[in-house]
Length: 266
Image (cartoon, rainbow, N blue to C red):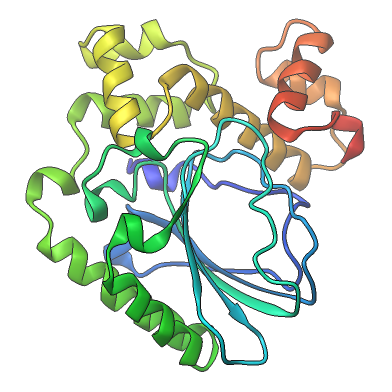
């Protein structure tokens, strides 16, 4: 089974105003988790929880005019706030790349972008500024999706074949992590891929941007958050038990690490 079908990242209740997600075309499903758009009336701070993904974010004034802010958000290990870019009403359109999905397009080890935000043109080149203008001038999300997918498909076609496909050991590890909903250890992953733990670490640092242990923890947290979202009648004790937590204190500590607050805050 393709790994991208096994993982559906969520921000839970922590989403911007007027937020919507849009699915990619079939040719980009292995790389793009979704496109997302939002509209906000002011510069309120938003906390983002780790999901293993990276995002290419375009933002502009809702009233039109001005420049387009373009940022590339690396994979984060802890909750963070990207910070307000504009004081007034603004629109945002972004590409959320599946874990490791951005690598074929930029060919740079994703570990270089861990826990940080970068100016989009520094990572993606000057062409991304032209794309930003097209997105600002486009009418509605459907037209913006056409613009961004045209650009991504062109970049993918130009990339050498070695970048497009993940190494077999990494692909095997990702499938196992998603199948186990994050409840698997690094030694098991290394053995199943017939590589050393050190080799696996290098693969994850380069292609995913996070170490395998941290990534497993994030995938487990994401599945917990998704279960809580979909099954509000489940108690936290039931959810913790389903994910292999032997005691509630350990579960609460892990949840707070990734969410920034206690489970009871949901």
